[in-house]
Image (cartoon, rainbow, N blue to C red):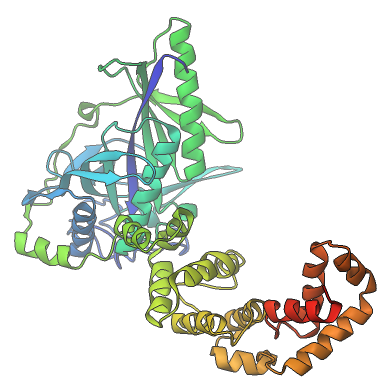
Length: 471
C-alpha cells in the first residue's frame, strides 16, 4: 500500500460480570436455556420501567479510571433507536453525550499511546441463531450490561489494533469486571478504518467492520480492508462510508449497509431514567480499589531484570503474576522462578494440567523447589519430575521427593559404581570420548543420569567419567 497511511479506530464492547442485568433483576448468566432469563423490562413490554444496576455503573467507573479517563460528575442514559430482530424494545439504552468516562489513554505494548475518547455504559442486544429452517432469537443476553470503549483514530496498522484490543481485554480481566471470554462473545469489537495519502491530515470516508470476537479476525479483516480501499483509490474510485461484515472462511469483507450517523438513530434522553450524579468521594474509593494493572505489572517485572518474553508471559494474567510473586516471597531466585513459570508450568497450563488461578500446589512450593535445586539437594532432571508430580497430585516438594525416591546421591563410591557400569556398557562412546569427540561426554552423562533417575549432579558425573576414562 505504498503512498497510503492506514487510520484505524476501535469500539470495544465488554459484557460486565454482574449478578443481574443492567436495568432489571434477571440473572446475567451465559449458557442457560434460551429465553429463560427474561422479564417485561428486558423485553421492553408496555409499562415496564428500567432501574439501573449500581454494580454496572461502578464497573464502568473502574474501567474509566484504569484507562486514565476523567470520570463525569453527571451522566445520563439515552435511547438509540433502531429495528433489528434481536432488539426486543426497538431501541437500546445507551449513552450519547454524557458518558461515564472520557479523555483517557492506553499504552500499547510495543507501540504508542492510543487516546480513549469515551467509556460508556449500555445494554446488550439478544442473540440471533441461524438454523437450517431460518433464524431464531435468544433474548437471554438482552439487557446484559455492556461497556463500550471508543478509541480515537490513532492506530496505524492491523497489528497495532490487535495489540490495543488485547491490552483492553487484559485490563478488564485485571479489574475482574468481565470474564472476557472471546468464544462466548463477552468481548467484541467494531473497527473503523480509512486510508489517506501519506502526510495528509484530513480523514477520508471510513468503513466500519462490525462484530468481531477474535483477535485473529480483527487483524485479517483490517489487512484485507486496507488493501481493498487502496485498490479502489489506485483505480481512481471513491470509498463509500458504510458498514461491512467479515467472512473469515473466504477472507473478505462484505457490504452490509450504508454507515449510519448519530442522527439516523434518533437519539434522545432516556425518558424512564433520570440523569445521575457521580460522587467524587465514591470515585476516589473506587480508585483506591484498583489492582495492579497490566502495564504496571510489566514495568515492575522488567525492573527485576527479566527477559522481555518472560515479562510478557508472566504479566499476561493477574493469576500468573501472583504465583510468581508468591514463589519469590518464599526466597527463591528471580531468574529461576521465571524460567520454571515460563517453561514447564506454562506448558502444563497449555496442556490443561495446571491452572495458575487455582493451582494444585502453592507458589511457596515452587519457591522451595527452586531453592532445592540451587542448594544442590535436587538435580534439574529430578526437579522436573517433582514438578510434574506436584502438578498432578499437589502436596509438598518434600513429599514428592520421598514418593519418587529422588533424593540426591551424595555417596561418591555409589556414584562411581554407576559410572563404571555405564562405561562398561558403552564402549563405543568411551572410545569416542578418548578420540576427542565431546558429544560423547554428554551421552555418557545422560546414561548415568538415566540409571540414577536424575539423582546425581551432572558435573559430578562428568568429573567421575573423566577420572575413570583418563585424559
